[in-house]
Length: 59
Image (cartoon, rainbow, N blue to C red; front, side, top):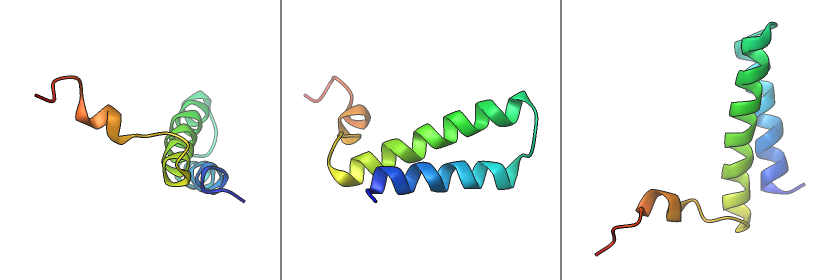
């Protein structure tokens, strides 16, 4: 299992643990699951989150 898959599962499980039920829980699950998937993909080397943090004006 890749880091992205592990991150997705962890994010979804944490979301279920925090909020149970309702539309807000669904939206929170999507946001948190996406964030953890992005972090896992970053650890796999698939995407570079550092590029988002550096911005456009580097000098």
